[in-house]
Image 1 (cartoon, rainbow, N blue to C red):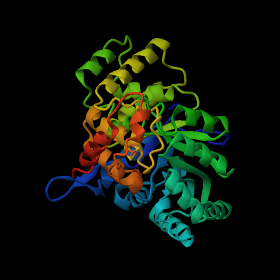
Image 2: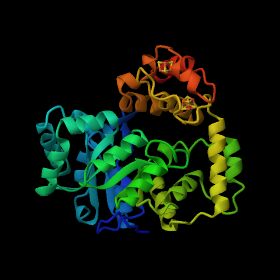
Image 3: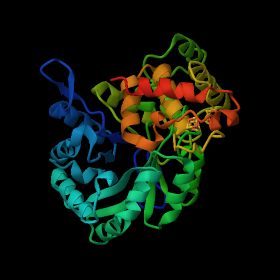
Image 4: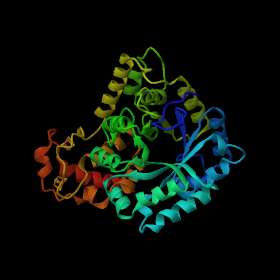
Length: 385
Ligand code: SF4
Ligand code: SF4
């Protein structure tokens, strides 16, 4: 296993972190996966194999597997495994309706984990709206108290907003020691993006990467035109390995989290992590990855480049972000995932149905996109089931 620096912390994380968001699950009576029913024996075997192979960081959260992932982890780490890993979990900041809720929720998390502390604690999924909640409900002060009395050992945040908000949040307090951002070859300029990664690393913060394969989208169901480009590479790698090596190639990345669902995923990711190192990919290989990215973008129905010239919308609609989800659902054939993101990460006023067709954005769009018409389609598509 490769180990990497983690900001200014005295801890060398494994290049691969174990994400507990997509664990194997049992089926319901109709044979459909029941995400609340984690397959304990298999998930635990996978975790133990990863730890026995050198993985030393496990990431969970209050809401993963409909609030059951922390409970599983508390059980799975028995038998000496707890001492061999750092445990990360997250405060669902949107559930903190009054300041006392922070301590109450953290207390439940410790009970679920059967532990007296969480090594790495994150404020979950921050964006402009949730950051306001953090400030209004005194969550930073609560976190500072939890740090002081040892219930949590290090504080960071995960992020799903705009770069500008990332900058604001990073600068807001010295309590942060690490951040967790979405970063992959399709999302280099999305959300915090490379700019955010460099900003955080430049401030000495550890940078954890989530969604390195975009929830599997750039690893599975690869269109033949994309596969043809991968086939040109002199060194053969699977699409999943290309995606992961692209992330590990970046020296500012501390490590990445992979949400593994099968033992085969674990085996493969361990192998890829062993082969990884910063600066591994040649300039020709990076150019190949860029060609794949361009091809995926050609498969997008809306020619939005995320330039954001159309913003702000007077109604608050998050125009490029709505288009991103719509395009992703078409490019990667993963509508349920994009619908979930639309429900969870978009506030009501950011959604496409707030568009009044005023036309203000259309004049500013260099791509000449008929934005109000696409908004109607996007709303229908992203809420279709
Ligand atoms: S047309 Fe719709 S999306 Fe565009 S600025 Fe007006 S309200 Fe916002
Ligand atoms: S101006 Fe046009 S291309 Fe740019 S982000 Fe807005 S919709 Fe997309």
